[in-house]
Image 1 (cartoon, rainbow, N blue to C red):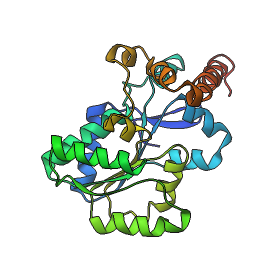
Image 2: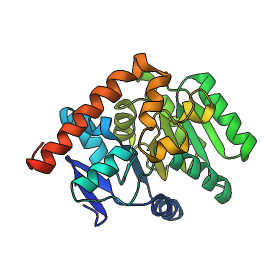
Image 3: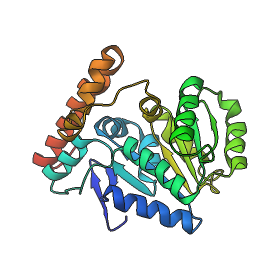
Length: 249
């Protein structure tokens, strides 16, 4: 385990700031090495307790950041304090900027066709059309996966962002990490394409800082999100308190 890595409820998490994370990624790209990156939040950590394949795919990653503020609070309660939250959407946006500055290429995979096209167009408008090496929606069959991988590799990007739901994105990247070894940075970004395209509004900064971004998301789509957040968050709190006061999960 890396020196800067802690374990929270059986999940490895790197104790890195946003700046430190970006620096590690830049080094990998310069050295032509690959970094497999994932983020974890309360819901994913809960899912990992019952899904060994998801747990393996996450814990084997090169960099694991705490995406949710609840994870940072839990780290403090468990006396393994993380420096800060490194939100996946913020890292995604920062890396688009970095790609533009360094003349790197990115590939966008996931979401519906109209969403990924909007993401590509916004990047082209705000930065440069040359930043995006290619893109494809996330609605493909298993038998088409090899074709998608070839499309990614042939476009020769330094970074790959995969916008799929969990655990699909984690398993896709874990399963294909060897086939994608020429891509220096691979990352699952969940719903980031929906946010970046404008389909979904992000919570105001104040709600982000106090750890209530999940609530803002819940009120936007209660029918789909109530179980993920209300049930998932409750299970996470229970696990944390068991670990803190009983020494087990």
